[in-house]
View 1 (cartoon, rainbow, N blue to C red):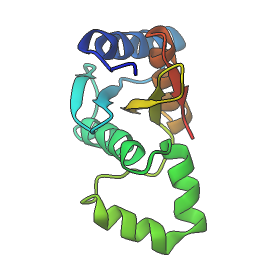
View 2: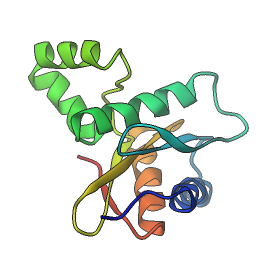
View 3: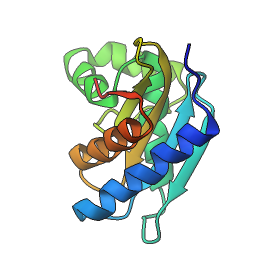
View 4: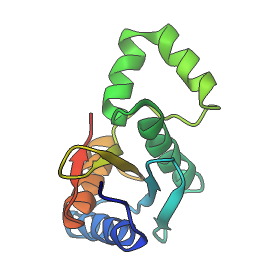
Length: 143
């Protein structure tokens, strides 16, 4: 099984920020978690608003907790609000149900972590996360 190393996590964060800069996105916060939900790498650009890191962390933690990208979690919140409310409670409130939380998978499909990005539109956050994951030679699963 492929492990999420510090080097790969740093590559994800750097490449995601690079994608954001070349695409003209607003300043971002990025959090890279391993499969246990532990922070491996994080970065917040100059100019991010105060709680962007916490939002990025909530996107990534929710993705790891449920094994789904945060886009899919957002759809689940609409379709199954009672389940979603219970899941939020079960994970201590650390779940943000909008795009930008992307699972990191190895080539064999094994879940090895998640990336959370916040600062621009949810679609752009997700695009930055996916670009970072791809740059590390891993597979992005936005849900």
